[in-house]
Amino acid sequence: MASLLAAGCTWSLPTSGPSTSGVAEGTYGGNGEPVQVAVVDINAAVAQRLRRKDDDNQFARALASDASMTNRIGRGDMIDVAIWEAPPAMLFINASTALGGTSGVMAPTRANELPTQMVDANGNIVVPYAGNVAAAGRTTEEVQRDIVSHLRGKANQPQVMVRLSGNASAQVTVVGEVKGSTRMPLTPKGERLLDALAAAGGPAQPVNKTTLQLSRGGRSYAMPLNAVIQDPKQNVSLRAGDVLTVLFQPLSFMALGASGKSDEINFEAGGITLAQALGRANGLLDNRADATGVFIFRFEDPALWGAHADAATSAEDRKVPVVYRANLKDPATFFAAQRFPMQDKDVLYVSNAPTAELQKFLNIVLSGAYPILNIVNMTR
Image (cartoon, rainbow, N blue to C red; front, side, top):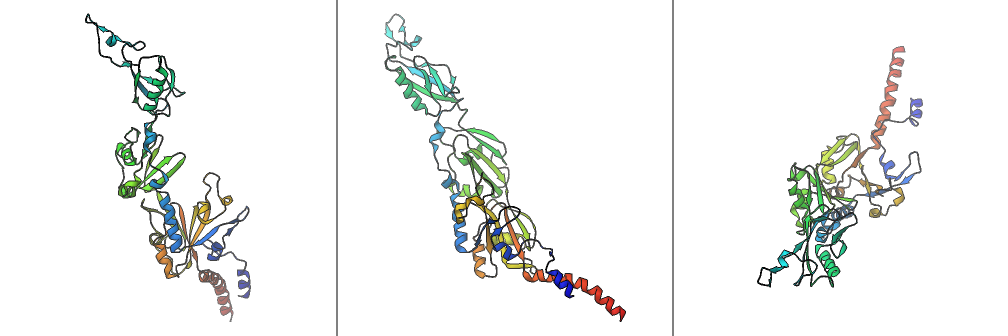
């Protein structure tokens, strides 16, 4: 028995993960250099700060509504140009400006409409006597004024109208769980998020399980469809090049350790709290779990808790690992857990209690001692 107890000091007992003290230490090694990870105790203030962070990612805050960009001409757009010249017209004369019959009366002036043309790769259109006129990135009104400026002194009191007849550049792409993926052209009206969803036939899945992800300028933002419908401010104006992806129940967390269920658990687009996550994981195993060792492993922005950016796992996202710790022996933690928001790809880990590890060791010791005792009893 003494030999088994001495050997137990060096045995590696089977376990489902690190101990409470091992996680709370916050210094994780591996094969490379040890990395210092922030360990944050969950309380009401922490939960409130995380909820404010989620509010900052809402469409209304992250994507300022600006419909001015939707009326810009782009490369590949089709443009119609009509030019009027006051009598006696000299440059843009046509049959309607000629002398009418034998009366010698000038006929009413009509517009001289140029052939429809495409904005070229350099962003220009061509207007007779004005040459190349920059069009890409400008409004139709700006192009009109530019053409008039070029023709002034050549044509007699010229007036110009420019019309966008074919929109090939200012479009929004809608894909995902919709009834029909589409590319929706933008107009000066200023189409919004739900307009694009309606143009694609609406969501193909239940509204309460659908997430809208809007990608713009190399970044993506996501919100539950329910939240966008309920809050008109989130129905932001769209810009050319936006990509709207409609996702069905894309969120999940992983429950591991001494939780009632070790599994990947999906949750609704509206999000869930830590309290709800523990309930869906069937709580804690009463005979194994350490109620002071409930942890959430997550990647966060370094600025949130003052973590060092050099601990980031990749240069692309620049997010650092953070561990949130819940002490369920403290009743106040249950209130904070009702407001602590879970995020997609979180890992919920419940460590084993020290007594559970001791019980495992004793089971191993006794399983080796019983055969010896039986042999001794038989030889008596």
